[in-house]
Image 1: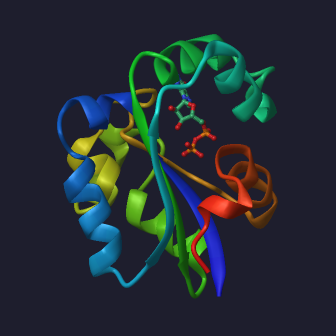
Image 2: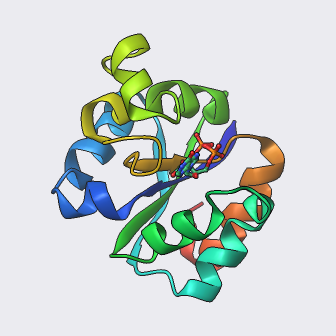
Length: 141
Ligand code: IDP
């Protein structure tokens, strides 16, 4: 069993896609261990995405992620990190519509930046991201 973090980004939350996205993960058999609606401060978003601090899109990413509320969930399942990454599709929503038309980014994303959803991309990321957003008390056992 593996745990991963997803964040429904401000674009998807704003267009009312939260329920459909969460439903998709339930249908795919994942167990929800935690869920939270909140809005990132600039400092929190900078720290959450610190691995990208030297990438050219870092400030754009931080600005986008602080532009409105988000919904974060911890999902549990076998091989959850890889399976969730497959379900969300490639980073660029346009590419997702070409190569993975039923993926979440294909269905709800706009482009490479506004791409509807975040998901941990490795065990190391999940181990950083889950406790960044949730305390132990907020995770059901
Ligand atoms: P990922 O979310 O698929 O793992 P990363 O390359 O880790 O993709 O980038 C993190 C996030 O940064 C993306 O989900 C997207 O929101 C944003 N991003 C990535 N590349 C670009 C870009 O070229 N322009 C603007 N935003 C980008």
